[in-house]
Image (cartoon, rainbow, N blue to C red):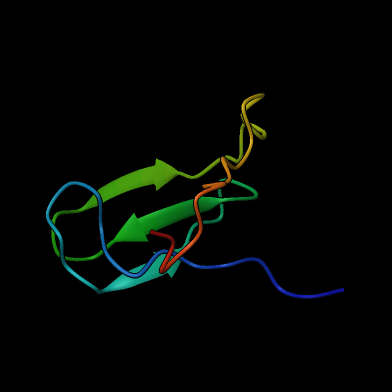
Length: 59
């Protein structure tokens, strides 16, 4: 099983000094702004990916 993706920057201040929080799965702490936040995957959108039937280079 692969590891979960980690955030690259704080959504509040933009700093990159993040550490996993002890609050649970998906929880992170920012050392720069002293905020804690949680990331959660909600699911896939029902519309999915849209395909361009024209294709590239079509005239």
